[in-house]
Image (cartoon, rainbow over all chains, first blue to last red; front, top):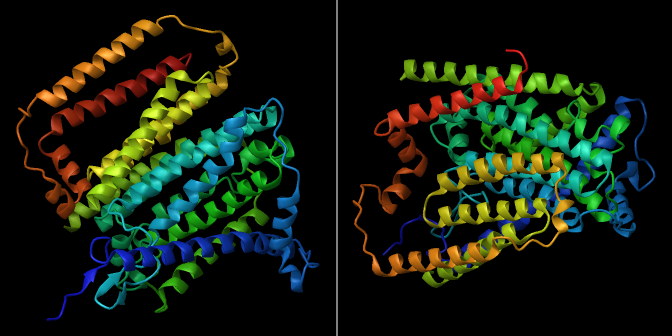
Length: 343
Length: 170
């Protein structure tokens, strides 16, 4: 009797399932945190060289140990809670900003199915058939961290930063979500794995070629949603000191810092999965494909930071509501027509 | 597995009820709003346990992600919270009596009543085989098309109304 091959689940082989899950979670978490740490080094190096400076050079070879030194420094700094701050929200805010971005990584598929014995293990922490909606839901939760940090610090700079952040994130979330709608109209599935499979035939099947407008909208809105330059109004240091995280110090500040880079990774990974075929092309190694695309996006984001000045706040709102939102809606309507005509 | 699911249900239910109590008992409106977000989140977990992942995602997206952010925004902008330090027992007794009565009546109906409604075609197996999103989409655009369109017109009217109210000159 030969048992048939099946997808590993909690009921088919509890121990193997638990072990596989723990390994997957550990690896994904470790890789994300490693990239977070070294993204800070890459950002300083790249921007440094773009401005004909060297960037960090002192710690080890070309400053390679700089992230560890920074981490140690932040760890040993005094942790200050302002006396008039709202303590509960003040402590909760850094956690609420980091957690949604880290748990979004769970649904990014990073390779073809793995077969161990008679069980198939999908290389993805959680396979959800509502995957894309989960991304949008978690993006919605990300706002709380900034809003709470801004409000609870009881500082004017922080409050303005927090208010700006919430207005900006809520507006751009909408256009980003609508840009994604066009993608799953084509793929006819909400599962991230399904969307990658739909693009896996060849490079030409990537949705970036079928949905160039949606891709551009998503990347720009993603930038705005994670508050990166040119949309870094919430922490505009020339006018707001450091925006919503002005009052934070020590590891709480480090969490905001990590959240910014984790958000960059998440947006890059989502854009790569939805528009650039995720793990499925062009080399045969799934994780390498995905990481390559993520790194390319992150380099692009850093490059933007070195190139563009900050936009004005009213321009930002105008762009979001009067240009991106109608464009995203028009894109959905056109996609709908084309889908109906082709079928 | 059943036992695990039951334990998980009670854990989430406990958190949901606790944060529900916190919503009405917190002094600071911002804390109440946060507790309400937590309650919505627990409701989303219940939807997942009832094999309705689409509802769960929408619950988090719309209620926790959009509506509560707006509420929090308003609370922050009005800077409420400073006035809430006064002791305030007005109406607590009647509220408590109503709450307990509702609980008793609900408990009575849950224990004694039998299901009289029609059993629909949609079963858990169907949802797991076919996909929850597809089922809802199909139902919305076939059986419930008219209510769906009426709702969208209602929302459009609300948007236009908000714009007219907000603008001084139209």
